[in-house]
Amino acid sequence: MNTVAAGPEFVVERAEGVWLWDTAGDRYLDGTSSLWYCNVGHGRTEIADAVHRQITALDAYTVYGDFSNRPARELSERLAAHAPVDDAKVILTCGGGESIETATKLARRYWDVLGQPQRTHLISRTGGYHGLHGFGSSIIGMERFRAGYGPLVEDTSVVPHDSAAALEAEILRVGPDRVAAFFAEPVIGAGGVFPPTENYFAEVARICRRYGVLFVVDSVICGFARMGNWFGIERFGVSPDMIVFAKGVSSGYLPLGGVVTSGRIADPFWNEPGNPFLHGTTYAGHPACCAAAMANLDILEREDLFTVALEVERHLDSALRTLADHPLVAEVRSGVGVMGAVELTREALVDRGITTAEVFAEARARGVILRPVPTALLVSPPLVIAWEQIDHLVSTLAGALDAVAARH
Image (cartoon, rainbow, N blue to C red; front, top):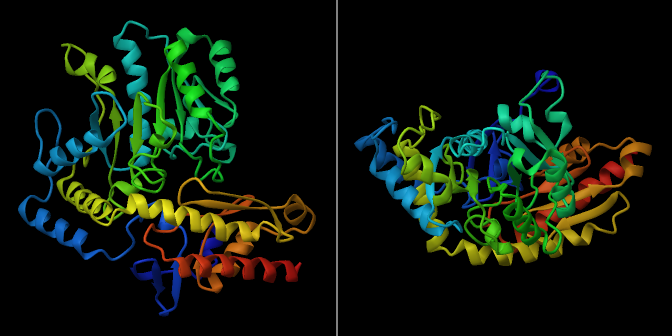
């Protein structure tokens, strides 16, 4: 906040496709899909038209109790039909953070109604990002987002992101009869773009089944074609108990998220009396948001952005790997999904005092938006990006690295 207060602010005026314009009229390549979400690109008038049609018919109304609306029903049925979850049910929310709150509370409540109220422990992974609400901050795998707030939610722990054996060891340390759920992103996104090791998720799914731990996939970043499929986790051939989604479901045109649960998780609430799940938000199931999502999913399917994303993934991977020999670069992580990370060397960060924020600022001054995290620059462009635009993104990043290196 102090840095922003020093000004001036970077004010985005309009956007179209993969491009942004600021109030001065300067154009920038959106190399991050805003915050990982604008999968179909900016300025899709068909989404705006769908929202207009819906909002003039029914602006909004609660979906509490037995209240519903047609867009919410149609969207839930459509998502359930594509989810790699047995007998899928859908709970709608307004975004990823709310969806994590829903999934964490549902995991604990599920065991409570099954007569195992001691199963409250939640396990997540280093680098995992699960939003910044109460439960999300408590299971996030990055300490900087947890520090300074006093006690958070109890009964949580974090294991190394690349070790299924570490997960099993932690379940045994805590006690299988106390562990409610394990949370994992298909590819760790905001924590630095770390794809899973080979057979990681197959082993994780086996461990969770063995000890009765609920397996919850956080697909907020990875879903809706960013990994070439609906929810990202399909790439690894496993079926979780719950999937958390948001971002790409509406490409960010309006706020929307949710949780897909298996029929097994829904059953004690849906089919047995006396087990309410007293949780929800005012705008969940908002008809205009659901209409935006339906139009967005139409685009994903009509333009087959699932197949396109796999082609973009390959070209982005090839282009980013040309940076691997740059003297400031320690590692390039890419090739699983339309996302990547360019990690800076310890020598650059520590000995030379270079910051990723400095590289970010240099790239932005040259017309490309990236996302800096403490040790890396992240990219996650819209899926509609063209080959020459990918090359422009990477060559601009290379130029920014060169300029920063020269200053130090």
